[in-house]
Amino acid sequence: MIVPTICRPDELHACLESVAAQTRLPDEVVVVLPTARGPCDKVVDEFRERLVLREDRGSEEGIVAAVNKGLVMAAGDVVCLLDDDAMAPPHWLRRVERWFRDGRVGAAAGPLVPPGKRLEDMPPTARWDALTWFGYSYGPRNDARLLAPQRAHFLQEGNLAFRRASIGKIDTRLVGRDERFGDDITLPLLRRGLHVVADPELFAWHAHVRFAFEPERVPAHDHVYASAHNQTYLWLKHFPPWRRPIFLAFGLLVGDRTVKGFGAFLVWVLRNVRRPARARAILRLVAPTLRGRLDGLRTYRAMRRSSDQAGPRDSPNP
Image 1 (cartoon, one colour):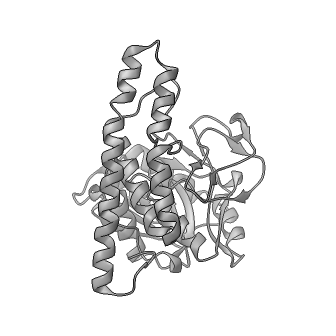
Image 2 (cartoon, rainbow, N blue to C red):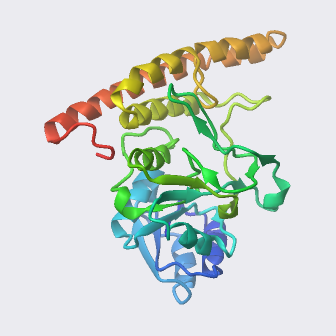
């Protein structure tokens, strides 16, 4: 198990307490701490008699850098990621172990439930996510629960388990807060023919930050830019060649729930035409979205050039 932390001692203590209370304890827990020693070091020391703990430093470099440091140290066949401000229910690791007895399963995760709520408090949904051949997607559903496990395309990164041998490292070319870095785990697994599973029983409690396009909310420009860049780059990287131009065209014209295209922006503005201030705020998101798309394309081309110089093309995880 890998737990990256930006040093929130109270949250980290609650996280490790939930790990120590598992009915199936992890073989090891790699905690990635900030470079400078701080109060989280004392938290880790509290659990040394209850958990097999290893540690590395440098979590201030970002979540992807922290996860990659943990992957270097992790020795298990299955790696579980748990955010430092997340808490897993006692059956979580036992449920993970059950899924990965099936050699066809490459990754598994579940919903993030707000602290103080129960899984049953979340409204039910029939579908976790979807990804069409031309690049339209929705999900995963942050605000709902599945009634039963199902195959998926995308998973939450805050409580995610995957096969270590299938993922060498997470791509460090991502920008922002490393939005959508989970796509660099699930999409290559799907390309290899492995199953990605969304299971409601693999939920975790997590006060995650909401960035989605919600009815009464306009996301920050930097998040919109990073989401557009990272989605564009990772999907071009993992889609087969014939899908790439279709995805780019559809993404620019229509888009999806998280990265909108010109058509979606137009519809959104028309729905808010009687609220001029909000309509103007929506229009101001067009430029960072387009810039993110173009920069994501540039990042993909730069990756291909470096891959051509280093070895075979289309390496799923350079």
